[in-house]
Image 1 (tube, one colour):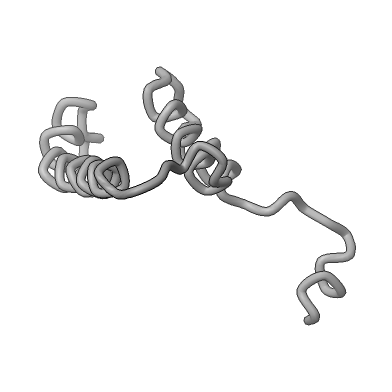
Image 2 (cartoon, one colour; image 1 turned 180 degrees about the horizontal axis):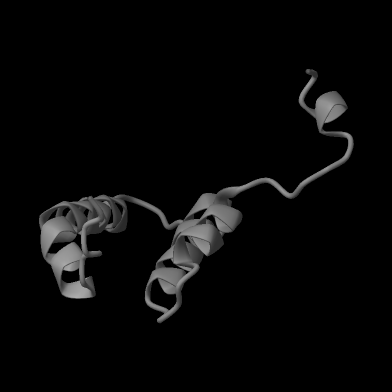
Length: 85
């Protein structure tokens, strides 16, 4: 028996607490690094994380794909040699 698809509001309400927890975890991690000695301005992974957060703020349907691309290696036809596989 087919069921009616959930509305955007129903999906959001179902996932809100998990999403909120993840955002709080990210905020706490960034707070810890901000309070620590030094800075991360030139750290490549910090730049990637900032770029991913910017993607999250966009109104788009491909945010997961775009974030994944930020954290992925560029494709290489020589990946076996490069990774010693």
